[in-house]
Length: 316
Image (cartoon, rainbow, N blue to C red; front, side, top):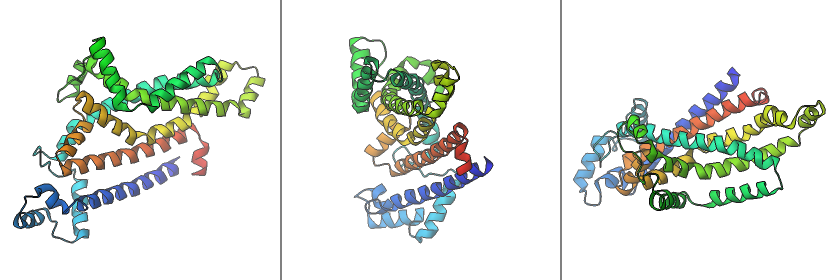
């Protein structure tokens, strides 16, 4: 197990290094260079020269990259030119809120999707399976923004149960104090995830139901419910665990739309406002954080995979 973890950790470090290189290259691929992108079309040649010298952009690219890497290791992601704040401070303020929204929506999706997928597999070919499959396809095919609009129209205007705006505030306590405003954002993000996860769970369960160990357990007299709960579900969760870790970037893209719709003060809304204002340091900082989150999610997936299936440790 230790060798498996060290191997995966080394791979994660290499990928993180490549992510830093890609973000650095993106910075230098901005139209007209970083100086022109930040100062705008009205920036004079003298201003651009002064900016390049102050930021070290007149040095060689390898030197710039190592300086950039040193700043990254100390948590320096630059300064927002629109908000006049360090990007790292902005991310520290917004990231916990996005993590809260993503974690709650994912938790809700997993809690609902697992028994839903099991039910679909057990009732395969029956009316229950057809209805749940149709609902899953419909939810998965519907864009996130359209789901959010439907929920706002139904539960904010037609039946005014929940507010249309997420709770505002700088701290997580302020979010929990107005938690009714979190219901619609969480449900909006969770619906599409439930649809996808339940389909994967159904497929994995059906595959495992045809395995020999199921027939052996049935021959020993174990009940169908016990076989499903003790054996089939554990093995069916393996592809779901993989999917969950690799789905982090998609969850963030959904959070971007949801946060903009419900004015939720998270990292997605920060990215949205930065894109509208061409605040490149913020855009690149968020891109780097998402890249790191993807790598960490993949690493956690490998660990969970190895815990659920010991055979993975022996062949990796």
